[in-house]
Length: 130
Image: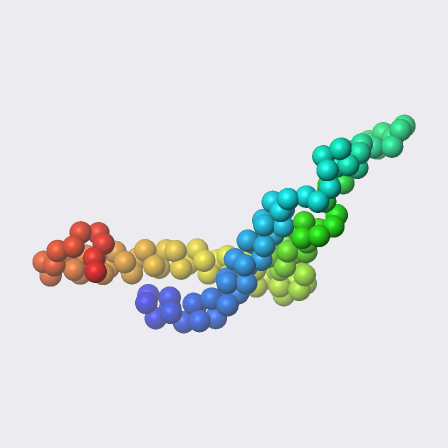
């Protein structure tokens, strides 16, 4: 298990780092303080007079901040999901998700093996050791 854990991490570690960074940037851009006032945002969200949403459509007001760092939220989301790179990017993003699941399970498995080996040899230290 340790061999698989190490070899898969060599390949997917780069992609998982990219996904983590773009996810953080996507959330940072969404939470970034808006440069427009609340009154201006309310005016942007108000539909024109006489507008009704067509039957079966989901009408949403436009996002408030369309300038600065906040406008990059969609771009970072597309990078994060791999959509910006087409089907290959999406496939790599999905495979990286599976790799993360594998790393979680195999890491726990390896830790439990080390812990039981330590316990069987009579070494002290509890669940966490130096």
